[in-house]
Image (cartoon, rainbow, N blue to C red; front, top):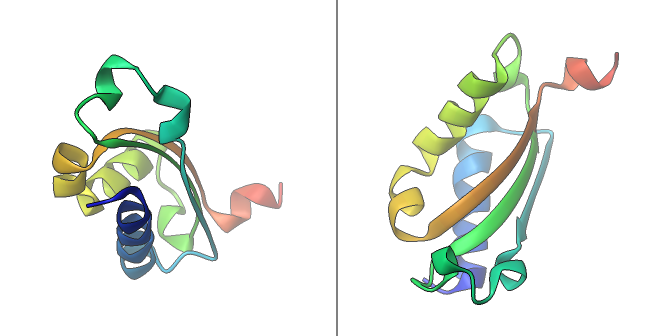
Amino acid sequence: MNPLERKKEITRRLKEAFEPETLGVEDESYLHEGHEGARDGRGHFRVLIITDAFEGKTMIERHRMIYRELDEMMRLDIHALAIDAWSPGELDR
């Protein structure tokens, strides 16, 4: 899978699973060129996701939910994933 396909697939899976009000997926692989973890061709991504599905969940639970949706991608296509995960109510405070 090329970097654009990875980004599209991450976006598709997270939209389908969480119906987010906000979702941003950035490919930051270029920041890690030459890095040990980048040599195998897997990408480095950053996700911002705001969804009602995270209401009442801890940050660890949210990350686990996301990792579960991206499971095989985490093994095959994603080397690193930075996550900012919020429920809409948290942003109103």
